[in-house]
Image: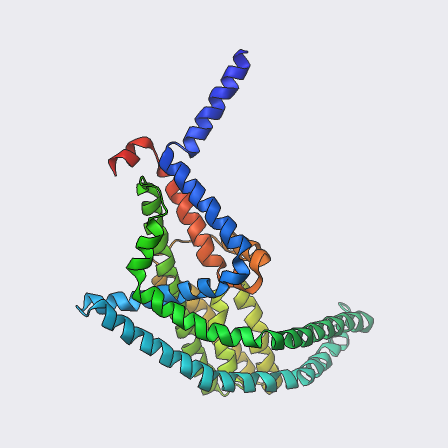
Length: 363
């Protein structure tokens, strides 16, 4: 009987530690309901999530104009007009060039692989004590099989993507429209959402303000990082005469969306194109390798600390787990939104242990 009383007391203490008052219970319910709704309606709401991300990005610029004493509505119209102009340039100028270079690169992949095979087949002659020709052939056969499967999957994806082309066109109309209304009616939407929350919501509001600040800092910093990486890479590759400079620089910019993993994946096309263009014997390949390494190092040493000094710092393991978890749930969009969602989780976990009755009552 005494043991049961001790166990019950232990359970009550644990419960009070994590849910010490009604406000934390309300916050827990909000988080659970939000996750269930997002998980169950993810496919339908992905355009909404993308619009929210873009609205966060543009909200920082609108705030800058408001700080210059420009009324919010003219600031929203000005920023949104610039956003639509940039979107038009991206869709009608840059995308056709990138697509053309991507098609050319895909057409040259067999030649790149053949050149790579010739280079690999020289290894048994140069280092017969380490590797045999039979082993090299087995490795190349497996690589060719994987590339064949990958090509078939890409063709299947392309055929399936034709079906979703209409949906993509609809999204191109819906997303900018939702971005505009998120900016224009921000306070109205927030007030509408607040009416569904309990009256005692000081804790929830405090956690939301922390999340709002962290996600806003992250999204704006990540967008700036993408632009800087794209511009620096394009200028570098174009100056050095590397083929497909625009395509490779776009990949360099987009790789920062998926930290660590993206940098690893983009290494192969950059060095593969450089190898096919100049080979290993020339100095140009070495220069490209050095330039690529310097750009990646500057991104990690300078850009990330400067741009994300005010954002939540996530450990590398946390980032990889977030990418695997949310990518497994929602595919591409899960990978794209993995870091913001992980930032939300960390912000909530950071705020949670600080909750107690005394602090809550003082708010």
